[in-house]
Image (cartoon, rainbow, N blue to C red; front, top):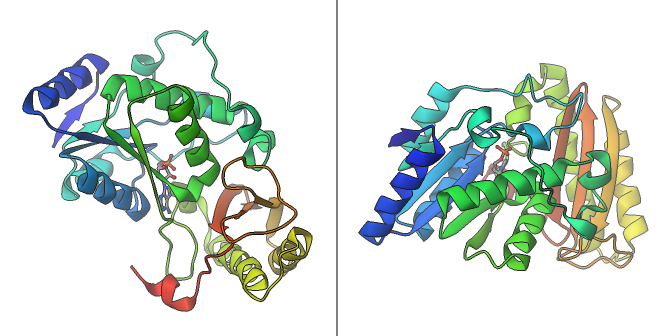
Length: 291
Ligand code: AMP
């Protein structure tokens, strides 16, 4: 595995892969790699000859008072994990390399950012779109892999790719979970032991929503009420939103279908966690324990 810090070297590496006729896959991350990221790498390896993982804690997607400064950074560990998973190139630019001056041009998700995390994190998706478009232009991947864990982000990036005619296939991978169902996240490292126990209610509450739907409830209000009641049983949680949205438009639905996305954002102590499932997919015990 080669580690690349500059845009110039990244472009050189990419050009050499072009010469070799190799397909390149890209997995953009903010580092503090975990098994969720590494599954994206596996999918990229299945779809390309050489995989690039970018590690960049992107300042433009963090709001004032968010956790940019304390976001976990461990390059040596990331390097070992990426290499062990067959990554060909780790692209880890410094902030100045990606943003030598403030960016004048702005991107915006439009109506796709009107619900879920959009209103709670002003400017977040603009920052994500900006950095991913820059990474796409620098790495020029044939395929890029994102996680369904950040479903709204994946939808926005898929739509950006389509709307802007980028010649890149977008692949979205299922969420990797702990045995108790908690979605893996770099931010789980912030959780104290009691917070970690409290956070386990999040997947259980999503599953309550799924089971209400599976039992025949298609009224969104009823499903959401069941999910909120389940979350409320854990006093350590502060619920930011619970919503069920259309998987294409990210608009709230009143009539629930199996493909609708049931999404939550909660604060556990100072840590903000998000999770979602397609309402039709439950987290049965077998699934929770599957690898
Ligand atoms: P991040 O480093 O948190 O920005 O995430 C980088 C990529 O990994 C994004 O596409 C995320 O959706 C994806 N990802 C994060 N956590 C998980 C997970 N538990 N399962 C699958 N993908 C994930």
